[in-house]
Image (cartoon, rainbow over the protein chains, first blue to last red):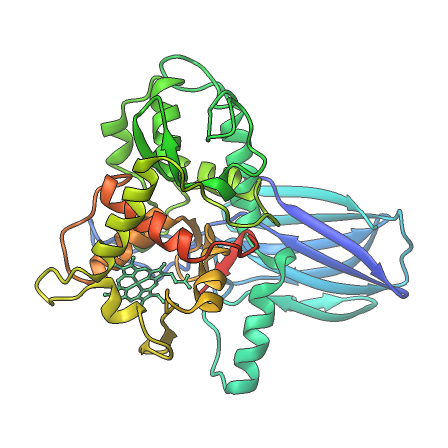
Length: 104
Length: 271
């Protein structure tokens, strides 16, 4: 089961600054297991979406170039304090996670 | 690729990349600024995990660690790390945070210390996640964030640890005949691109000691001072130093006293 995320969303003028930390091993598929010599299968977050009050504001395809425990920061124009941000991710093995935060 | 990056109504996206790209001086500054951004510090994910672990009943005695005494009384976490290492009456020795955690995991939870010592650090070569003790140390240390480094120096054992630690720091040993001082007692030294802390330079040693435990980006895990001691012994090509041993707590006592007065800025994030 996926470990919790952390989201921080704050208004700066009319722009919401959203910062997301995701717990994930982000295996590239290129790493060899030193004990067995076998490649460790790729395991990475593939899709991230973010909504503000239900409307999609970000949809991203991630790949294996992104580090372990990824950090994603983005800015959205328009929301107000108290609006709800929801972030979802899905990885290439079908695992999913979701978290939400109120914009402060 | 069906869809690369679609963003509506947004100005900028920052993603943590596995390896920083080619960097000139300017982008090194940018990289440092990003490392200093607490909201971008995955160490917080580890602190959260440590908190859950700390408050979960575990071990043969099915107990939490909430009654652990880090020097200010059972269960008093706030500011405790800022006053460690210190002498503990029950164990009759000077302990740092990690060796104290080991004590509590043994006495309160009934874990076997020698079992825990077999695996104290996540191995980044296998992309492992943090060990329990790494998560716990990150959590407990964070309860001293913003406080000043102020370890006690009253008990004779505390004074002895400080002295032994400094002597050890200068002691040359191992196949390379290195001492800690070979690398860490002058300004401006570096190994490859890593600048090395001078523990006799107040600003330098405070900048170092106030930012441990730290999230090490190259390891993808949060590390603690015991790991740094082990890692630097590996740098010296000596045998592994024992987790929580008197030698490690003496060294950590010395380093912590050198940095006295610095303000904890946790969790740290380093390369």
